[in-house]
Image (cartoon, rainbow, N blue to C red):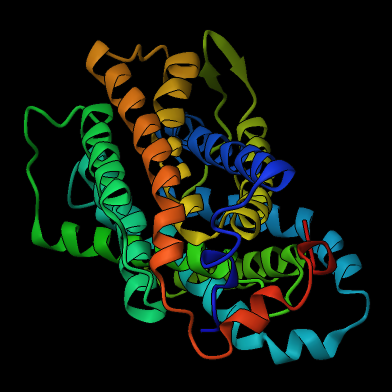
Length: 340
């Protein structure tokens, strides 16, 4: 994998780049977080998780693909040169993360599985430390600890959970997919326009999920029964449309835009807000009111993100630039690179 340039320079963005990066990151986390509440009613109506994920990613691919083609501008050689990267992104960051997560929840409770998957920011920190020599500072580690504690409270795991070895292994595999998403999304050195990366990854993800369904590894069941959210009954295709357009197309493209502006480390920690968003949407759409301890957990997650951001400057200052990394990160201003 190529150098994640932003993690040594743009991981401490300033001004409009920081503001827009945080905005895209929050939009991505909120969009991803909506998916659980929307899918819940579809599952109760008879849909299988595999069918929901396939439709969600497939619709997103249809929405993003035209924009990806325009962004590519006929530079097919660029796409061929980065074919391996797009395949890895689509297989691991899109299809793999979702398939492994739904496999995990077949063996264990949803809360613990989600918590294990969202150890991905810690994996990103370790990757950047080992691969790029960016040793995390004390402030960053403190922020990571706060965010982890906040996630435990948000997921309301104080009563304990019945974990299974297969479930934990599947959830850890989902974590690898999520970490891959953050690292690749933040890489500006590959020359891939964000829309092209998102569109290509969603197409590959759709193909992988479809293949898993064909061979029977991902059960496919659908239903035309109406579903109800917040007391309002809607036809079955409405939540599917929102899942595809908002929780996938918007979520992935805005997530890549955030990663390019914030770097993979900070973007991955801001993405922890997805868990908080999931709780809020469950409250709004399913009338599952968050408990006081969950709201406290949300505040701790926010505090953790702030401390991680404060620790980024020390981390970047203490990192030893890899050979050739400085020219790649500083040869051009950020505006000259492909941007979302």
